[in-house]
Amino acid sequence: MGLGQALTSAVSGLRVTQSALSIISGNIANAETPGYIKKSVSQVSAASANITIGVRLSAVNRELDTYLQSQLRSESSGGSYASTLSSYFERLQAVFGQPGSDNALATAYSNFTTAAQTLSTSPDSSSARFGVLSAGQALAQHLNAMTGDIQSLRSQAELEISDTVAQANNAMAQIAAINQQLGQTNVQDATSAVLRDKRDGYIDQLSQIMNIKVVPTSNNKVNIFGGAGVQLVGDTAVTLKFDAKGSLSPNSVWDADPAKRGVGTIVIDSGANVQGLDLVANKVIQSGKLASLLQMRDQVLTQAQAQTDQIAAAMSSALSNKTVGGTAVATAGQNGFDVDIGSLKDGNTVNISYTDSTGATKTLTIVRVDDKRVLPLPATATADANDRVVGVDFSQGMASVLTQIQNALGSSGVKFYNPSGTTLRVMDDGVGGQIDVSAVSATSTVTSLTGGSGELPFFLDGTRAYTGAITADGPQSAGLAGRIAVNPGLLNDPTRLVVFNTSPLTDTADATRPNFILGRLTTAVMDYAPQAGVGTESAPFSGTIASYLQEMLSQQGEDAANADSLNQGQQVVVNSLQQKFTSTSGVNIDEEMANLLQLQTAYGANARVLSTIKDMIDMLLNL
Image 1: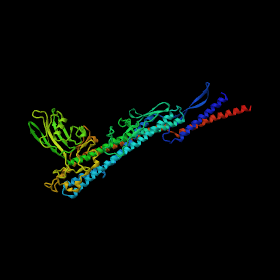
Image 2: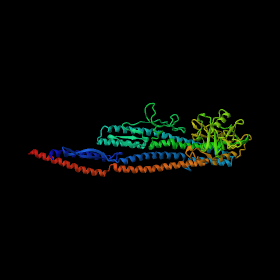
Image 3: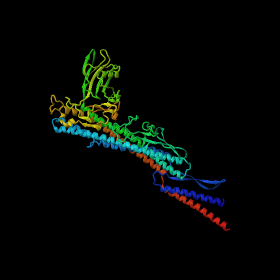
Image 4: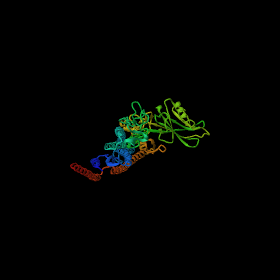
């Protein structure tokens, strides 16, 4: 080897060593920088004419376990989902109140039934009447406040979705911009390594927002896909659009039909007047913070509202609904019942039980419907999973009512007539027939405080009676907990808690109505809509108001505990993976210092070679 070659080799060694020193010093300086990946250098021999004349830097590497990184991102998405879910469940638990506490719904209901018990034993006591009205008002106001709190949580989720979508758009735009920078060259240098670190930080942010899949491509670029294979980022990034609705109400629900949707949805922005892909409708978002916010807004909190509405509806109906059984009648070889339906209001029902030709017992529920837009009614219009529901428009008179019922039932064999006035006659198919009508009853809502019976409109839907009406805007029960109020007629005249008839005048010590109120609140068995989340469509929950309340609170508590358990377990997994990832990709100061010592030795050796070459050249020159 000549002096020139030796000089070239020593200089190249110094340059590579300097570069390595720079990389290691950068590692040490960024040891506490979040998202920083440890760097190292790769060097190869440099040759000319088959003669090794030095060394050169081939690449700056990131010490990265890509499989572990992929696992961490997946679990971080789940961790973000679980954390957000747990946080909202904790706040929802505060709305329902801790069992036994003064601000718990169960306590408010217990106070109401206790006051009703006192009135039952002392109907002539003015303080007992005041106690019932006071407890009833407190319960109604508690339900009003719960509705406000639940809808406030939904509104917070709506606004948080908007903010999170903005964060996702920023992360995707940054990833695409870095992709473009990296795509200009395939060199593995320090600049590209830093850019990839920066890009990984944005990918990590995006993985916490939603479930993603990262696919490496050429020139250090990546493509990012969401659920259902939807591409989010390549050389360019999609823009997500969220049409936030702001403050939500119980009737603000998600629907694939924009005309029916009262909450925001997430779509890929495809430009003006062009409806992009709906990520919510197509179930693209399956994990991450966005998934949990959507679940809370559209499922958990909506169900919580529906359950409180069921309590409000059950209390209202239990006290104001009057069921009258049909009168048995036999004529022309047919047997059945007469029932007066003249007092039925929108949402009130006629219930019919009969045995069909196979011997099976059938239940038919006829519902008065004043809003013809909702006809025909779905089977879910009532809580009974085994009944057949027929919605009927009463506006055209009894002849029209009979025609609608008969057309809906077809060849069931049950016959309907109108012998006079507003009487509905339900008959079997006659002598030798196979149809047997076993029971007919009509349930109507009492709207008068002096209707001559124990039933009374104790609670109102704002200023109107609660009848269970079904309209195109939804069932009357939707949001009822936010509107329920004690009848102002009772507040103005508390004696109506006892006096239910004016002719003859009910004795002020008569316990008939107080006993009815207490019995309906404590022992009346009712069916509850399974759409609220308690019970199932095949087996709806049936029981007293107190038992439904207990089941509802138990389910809410169990869901909150499960969410907390999921969050704790997920955080353990995420932290464990993060530690593993840090141990392989993070900076170890002791290791870097040992590398510095090795480089110091290498630098000194190359410098010594240079010094020796200088001495030899000086000697030659002096000759």
